[in-house]
Image (cartoon, rainbow, N blue to C red; front, side, top):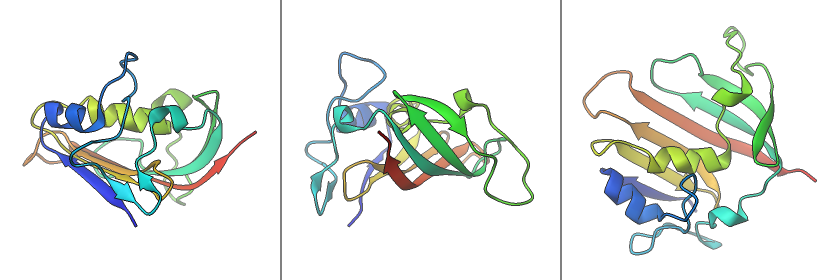
Length: 154
């Protein structure tokens, strides 16, 4: 079962996700409109693993970083990005351009007041998808991400 959080203001997103002393990460999942899954609420950021690999599909909006990429994260930092898994689109992002799971949560927190955010969690409570419409009713300002094939690394 998937859960989603929709926020239309930065305050709504910040209130929903919470803030920790570290400005890069939310401290806790939403409370009153808390997303739930079959395993409970969203996992706290501290439960996000430091080393993992996943496939990140980036879509919507007008930008270079589109398509599906196999990503390796070690100690919370992207260390490897495979070439785009979609044939015919040769764009190769550098590691700094590719968000980690934690970065996806930061993106959800860092939106402008008029932005619309849809953040979904998987059954484990980790971010599964994120869609941001930075300026509603504007074209090509959106960014969308889907996380799949998440695997923890030793």
